[in-house]
Image (cartoon, rainbow, N blue to C red; front, side, top):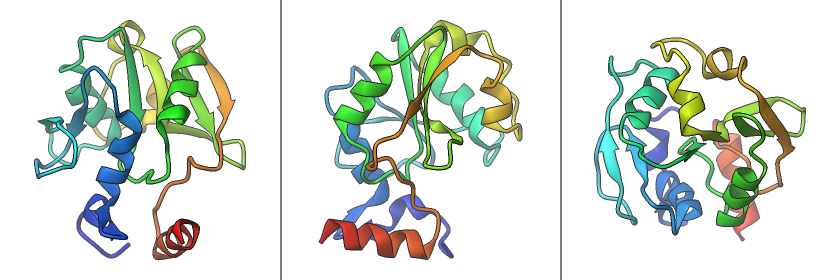
Length: 165
């Protein structure tokens, strides 16, 4: 997107991170991995080791702060995901977890729900793909609702703004 931290990009005055956090209303605890900053919701901040170590390192850092039986992994660039989407994902957990599939049928690892004990049994290594890390677990594959779209490009931001008007 051409910015140092796309989660700070405002859409209609609300940063992408805050839009995503809205889907976690009512959560027992929200842990965000990244540089601390003001957010619309009360969150607990932590950083991955090493800094910039990727999603598996971020998962390890966040998981270290989790005490709940279930964990929801959400990328911070899912501005239309809703609480209902998160609840559907948690309800779909089978075996170790549940993962939303995009329109092309690809697993969206950073839009998933897992049993904490299952994640604790996985070796989380920096600079390793989250898909490669979690693929060996048993999980349900759930077709994502249209609200589960991520914003990776300037074109995605344009489409998002169009959907919000």
